[in-house]
Each structure stands twice: as structure tokens, then as C-alpha cells.
Length: 336
Image (cartoon, rainbow, N blue to C red; front, side, top):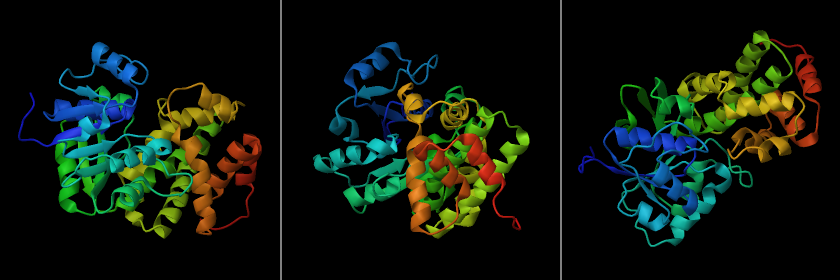
């Protein structure tokens, strides 16, 4: 049952994670609206109470209200959760900017794990660019959507420079199967997601090439080094990458058979082309679109990110995956 005293939530995005978070908040007693930019599909969601494209077999709580009008969806809401892929993120933020909606007191929460390709900016930076001095937070961690939807135990971290804002997000989503920690390191928590997606693609390529557990462990171990290296230069705290948004998220995405990025990499390793894989699925594969942005960031900061470089060469310069792995293995010898 909804509690009228609790904060009112709107989830922007009808994908797997947006639908899952809407379910978690609703089951926790919150008033939840789910917005989608696709009215016909939204009508189906409302009628079937099942997201058959992204979350087949998972029932959507009857208390969740679906809304196609963005202004109506956001009006009267306290917390705006952006479950929008990075590719379309700014477009939706701009729509809000151009609307007549008062942003006073609202908290904008990013749950997307990507970097904007043109500007190389994080999603909360886009919030600030377009909406000015608003309250922002990030919710990220090792959370495969289907597992959370099935109420299997999972941990995640809510980050905001404002401690009270992070605690508000923690209160909304915490329950017996979904444990939320808080952090003040917005940069680190927000970078962990897109950075680990690239390493997950490599883990998948390794699987596709038929390599074993030793190779997977090496990819994770050296991958977290690259993540820390870039993250710290961009202002993140090193310890964040040893936690849920770093090593935790990296491990899940590299290992899980339900990971889109790992599966994408596996298909690349088996010889499929990126364009064909992306066109074969309705899901957004952030690792495919983020690789170029992260590679450009490594060039901007003039740091060595050999795994990221090889993924970039495979996806955008048609380098053979096996040759990329050989080149990683035969790099100049050095101390760890």
C-alpha cells in the first residue's frame, strides 16, 4: 500500500533497469510513475503488466502508474530517476529544461552507465549543464536487472555530495533483498559503470575465443587498474573502485551470463561484427558505444589503458580479437 507521506518517485525509461527499480520502489510502498517515450509500448505495459521485451516473465506491480507525457510524469514528483541510455540522456534533460516544470526541491538520480560520446561528460554533468544548480545523485553497483526483479540478494551504492540526498535514495530502495550503501564520491561511483563495461567486453571476447579462467582473472585484475588510473585523474577516490561501484560491478558484468556487455564481447570473439550485433538486439549495449569515449578520455589525460585501447581497435579499427589478445600478452615486461 502506498504511503502518502513518502516521497513520490518517477522513473524515466522503460528498459530492464528502469522497470526493475520502479518495482523495487513500489514494493517498498512508494508512489511510482514510470515514463516512456513510446506510447504504444507503454499502453502494452499497462495492459499486460509485463515488460515482454526487456523483462519477460516478471510481473509489474499494479500500483505503478504509466505516463507518456513527460511534464505530467514529473510534476509533483520528488525524485526523478533517469534510467535513460547515455545516447539519449541529454535529449530528455533538455525536454525537461524547456518545460514549465518547477525543479525546486527535486532530486535527479542517474542510473545509466555511460559517457556522452561528443562531450565525454558524465550524466550528472549533463544534469548540471542543462538544469543548473540542482540536487543530483548516482545509483550504481553490481546489479543484473533480472536478478533484482526476482528478488535475489543484491547490493548497490547511492552517491551524492549531499549526504542527506544519498540517504534519501538509500531509504527509498533499501529492503530485505536490495541493500543500499551511501557514498560522497559521485565521480567514482558514476565512472565505475561505463569503465567496467569495456573490461566486460574484453572478458566476453576472451570467452568467445575459448580462453579459460586464468585469462578472465587477468582481465579483471588488470582491468581494475585501468579503471582506477583514469578515475583518480578525473577526481574520483581510489577506494571507491575497490567497492561495489568498482570491483563489485566489474566482477558481476564480466562473469554473469545475463550481462549484455560480456555477451556482446563473446559474440565479437566468435567473429561477429559490432554493427550486426547491435542491430540484432533492442537493448542498448553501453560497452559498445562507450569504448570510443573512454579511449578518447585516455588520450586526453595521456594515460596508458592497454585493455581499453585494444577494445577500441577491435570495435572501431577492425583488429582481429585474437591478435589484440596476443598484443596484450606480449607487451613490454614490467613490474606489477
